[in-house]
Image (cartoon, rainbow, N blue to C red; front, side, top):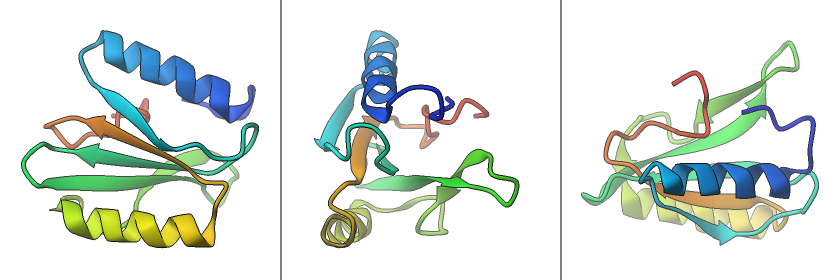
Length: 111
C-alpha cells in the first residue's frame, strides 16, 4: 500500500474497509494528522500476543514496514505500553489495530 498519492486518512479508511470485508477486523485506536500522519499497525493475535509495525522510509526513500519491538511476536501488554509512549511523543500518529492470528501485517502488500 503506497501512502504517497492520497491523504493518509483516505488510504487508511479504504484499507480498513477492504480488510473488514476479508474477515480481518480493524480498529482505529487513534486518528492522527489527516493528511500526513505517521502510522503504527498493531496486530492482535487474539492469544495475548501480537506484533507492532511502523511505516518508515528506507535509505532510498521508499515506504516500508519495520517491526518496532524487534521480536516479531511480543506480549500484548508490551505493545500497548509502547503505543502509550508514542501517543505522548507524537500526537499526530495514526494507530490501527488488526485482529490477525497469523501476525502478518495486512497493510504491507509484500506479505
